[in-house]
Structures are given as C-alpha cells and as structure tokens.
Image (cartoon, rainbow, N blue to C red; front, side, top):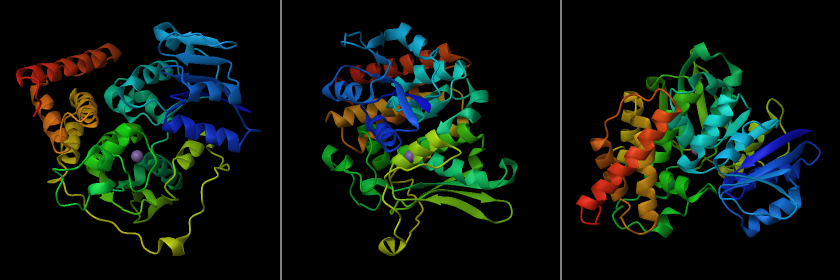
Length: 373
Ligand code: MN
C-alpha cells in the first residue's frame, strides 16, 4: 500500500489523481488532501477517500478531520511521513510546497512546471529525484529508460499546437475559443498557455532543469494528433518515444506506479482510428512566446522566473477579458524589458523576484492609465 498526498486535489491534476486511486484501491491510500478552500468537491473527496489530514490555504473547520493551514500547515505537510506527494497546484502558488518538499527530501511527483522553472538552479541537485507528471516530460522520462543520459543526442517535446496553431488571424480570439483545447483536458492557465505556445516554451525550460540537458539539445514540434508525447534521440540514431491517447491519467499513474505499470482506465490506442501522425515546425513569428521562453531559458539567472510570473499575470488579464489574446506576449515582453535582478541563489531570492515582477506589472499598468497595452 502506497500512501499519497494530493496537493491541489480539486483541480484538474488532483481529480485525475483520485481517478487513479479509484482504479487501484488495493494499492493506494490517500493520506492528505490539500486545496485552497472548502468546496463541495473537496467535501465529497473527504467523504470518499477519508484522508487523515486536510490542508487548506485559509483556515476553516471541517468536522471530523485534522485541518492543517497557512504557512505553518505547509511546513507540517513537508514533514509528514507519506510515500509520495503529488503536486497538482496550478501556477506559481505551487512554488513553496515544491521547495519545502524537495528540501525535506520527500518523494515528489509534480505537474507544477512553474515551480521547477522559478526555483531553477536553487534546488537543482534534487531534480533528478522528481517524477514528472507533465505528459511530455513523462514521455521523456519513460523513453530515457531505454538508454543512458550521456548517450542522448536530442530530446523532442511534442505540442498539440493548441486550437490556433494553423489559424491566420489571432487578433479576435475569444476567451471561450482559447479555453477549447482540441486534445487535452487541463486547467485554464495551461490551456491558454497551450494556445499561445508558451506552454511549450515553459516545458523546454522544465526539461532543461528536470533532465539536466542543454537547451541546444531540446526541440519542440507541433503534433496535432497528440499521440506521441515526446522523443529521445540517442547517439546510435535510435529515437525512442512514448505514445498513448492524450489523457493525463497515464503520466499521473506512471509517476505513482514507477517502475511498475498499473491500470488507468484510459482508452487503448487504436492505430487504425488515428490513421496518421503529423509533425510541423512551430511558427515563432506568430507565437513569439515560444521564442521568448527559449531566450529566457538560455539567459538563465532571473529570466525564467520573471517570464513565468509575467505570463501568469498576462494570462489572468486575458481570462478576465482585460486584454486581447495577442497582447499576452506584449505584456510579457514589456515586463521582461523592465526586469533586472541578481541571479537567484536561494528560495528567498526567487520569492523576491516574483514579488518585484508583480510590482513591475502594477507600475506599467498605472503608467498606462489603467489600460495595459
Ligand atoms: Mn505538457
């Protein structure tokens, strides 16, 4: 029996993690559920999985459960004796838990790319122990089982391309259209990031840190069918990859069951139904965030963290209807232009950069008279 902590339990990754627990009740036991606040969904999860602990960002009482909350609660979580911590928290809110868990050498499976990118070099020596849940990184992790790290020639991340990769006019994209991902069922932030291709840019940086691979050996290709999730090319010319129906339950399950493979309930791959697999070069002119992310990754230092925060702000503005889809990269670029910090060397440096980046945005917003771009 493996005990699990599910951070972000009511989100997309959290609920799909609990699907895996339902598929494998004899193998998994949920010991902790963590969410930002009490909701009907969380109460249902507590009733069904009967965790020993529940963490809430804001303190609230729930009858019959031990509640952890706030800063103190986070510290307590990171000291609990639990076999595997699943981090399904969306965005930069996932940084602190990631940091505390890694620092305490807890086993961590994470879908929170923002934390890996922002913490960057700070906890680098711990990254090789992380089980990636991001589907492309899970595919790379799985493909790497076929060879040695030193024999890698190239790593290729696939991108569905989101809903717009072949659409001419991006000026009039609506929030509703951006949230309609053609292949994957995911949270809002990552769905918009998929549509701007920023998601792939962030994943290149994530792959660089997780697998300690230089940027020049990491590529991204558009693969609209989303069946191949990543490739590893080795020096003998062999290219190993992982294929499956696009369903997050597979990478989540593998992160939990590694090195075993368990039932996921995911539909089997039908090659005749798929018929063909296509690959295209991403257009960095029309999707400047992909290029920008690569540049920030190469520059290192404070750049990856500023990029991540700037994007999170811009996506939020878009989702609220304040800016156009095409203004997302403009805002990110403006914030990057104003940013100048020393290279982060510890957690406090990272948090400082995040807070200062938010201030840069606020100042830009003010000087623009309340109008952004
Ligand atoms: Mn991904």
